[in-house]
Structures are given as C-alpha cells and as structure tokens.
Length: 66
Image 1 (cartoon, rainbow, N blue to C red):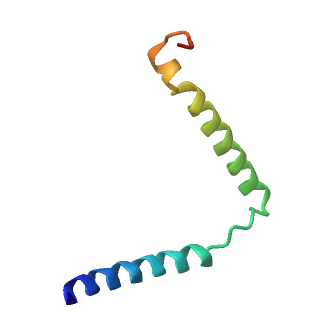
Image 2 (image 1 turned 180 degrees about the vertical axis):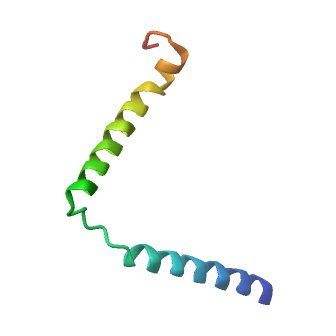
C-alpha cells in the first residue's frame, strides 16, 4: 500500500512540476523584426511540410472517397 501511495505521490509531483514549468513560460509574441521573420519562415516551412508529406503526397495517389 505504501508503494502505491509513493508511486502516485511521485507522479503527482512530476505533473505539478510540469504544470508550473509550462505556466511560467512567457507566451508573448516576438517583438523584434528578426524574430518575427524567423517565426514567419518557420510557419511557412511547416505549412509546406504538411502538404508535402501528407499521405496523399507520399503515396502519389489521387484522393478518392470510398
């Protein structure tokens, strides 16, 4: 019984640590021009990757509804 409580206590402590860490991060957007350009290029690259590596593009097959 003590082992189970210890495991749940450790898991709870890890979850609490993760929550605190994520809440302490600042989610403010970048204010510098260079940072904005980097963010924009990353977004464009992610959009391109999503279309290039989709299942349809990877298998080179036309989409069909079944």
